[in-house]
Image 1 (cartoon, rainbow, N blue to C red):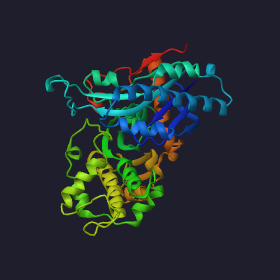
Image 2 (cartoon, rainbow, N blue to C red):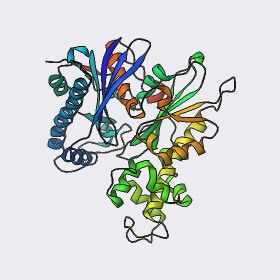
Image 3 (cartoon, rainbow, N blue to C red):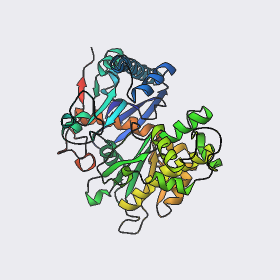
Image 4 (cartoon, rainbow, N blue to C red):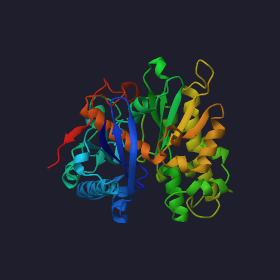
Amino acid sequence: MAKYIGLMSGTSMDGVDAVLCDISQTSCTTLAAHSIPYSAELLTALNALCSEGPDELNSLAIADRLVAETFAKVTLALLEKNNLHPSDITAIGSHGQTVRHHPNSDVLSAHFAESSIRGFTCQIGDPNTIAVLTGIDVIADFRRKDIALGGQGAPLVPAFHNAVFASDDKHRALVNIGGIANVSLLAPKQDASPPKGFDTGPGNTLMDQWISLHLNKSFDKDGAWAASGHCHSGLLDRLLLDDYFALPAPKSTGREYFNINWLSNALANYFPSSAELQSEEKNNNLAPKDVQATLLSLTGSTIAQEIVKHFPKTNREGAKSEVIVCGGGAFNKALMHNLSNALSDYVVTDSHALGIHPQHVEGAAFAWFAHAYMNDIPGNVPAVTGASKATVLGALYKKA
């Protein structure tokens, strides 16, 4: 067994998680975790970097160092909390902070001809800085090798989910609901089938942005505001018409696509007579809390529809397939209720059932990816990302 630390901050940007794991060739045990939020100033800068703006290069370079310093800070706090020293850790696996994800060349720059545009993904958090400040070797830059091989660079977690959480005899779906939601569809080990996986669409990001706009809150605790409203079936149907939901896998997306502008355009198309769609006043009998309820249903519907479409309800012996939820969405009681109703033919629970806190699964994944790098284990699944072949992901940044 060897100790690794995984560092993760997802598209929701609600904080940085450091997860300590003991990993061998056959197991990954989560030992401890620690989380800290970004400073308000850095969070504002990161949100600005998720869309085009002035002085992007300088802002990106500065944020790259500040994110790394935050990652190092949470790592050192985790070590202190558990009476560990840097020498006790084999390596850190750092995902970095995603600020842009355009794997399908869907953004054209005025500086390049259309024919020269390539898909890309951008995660910041300088691994050299993390290595120097922590005194621990860092494995980072996990996504770009997959993109170089023609893949989307996401989702990567199906390889980890399959290695650690696949059942001997049951079908098991892992659903991560962060800013964006993704699913890993795991066949029983006895079937010896590779996992499937893809981003289903928005997870928490639209709900977080909508409640921030109207109630100045960073998220809807327990989904209480959504639960106080009513889903507007006509608006939900309109949102579900977006081309992304009909795309076949492999597919991935981000908050660059599903954001408040996407929602505003959808509302404007559905309620063209509304003068101010983002006001607190009702628009055609639709209150802001009803929009929130509809957004919750959008997240639940897009997850459930993909699972029903691609995943069997039982194994060969008739045991129900399991749907295991992790990420921040696992704590949204209204969303979990929505999923349980939509997936009544499955056993729906959260990752506590697998012995790991829902907020720690992705951090543990990147601890495992560091282990995979150190042991020459491929980290991508070509059927998931669309890459031309499986490959070891990441690069090593040695401590000073």
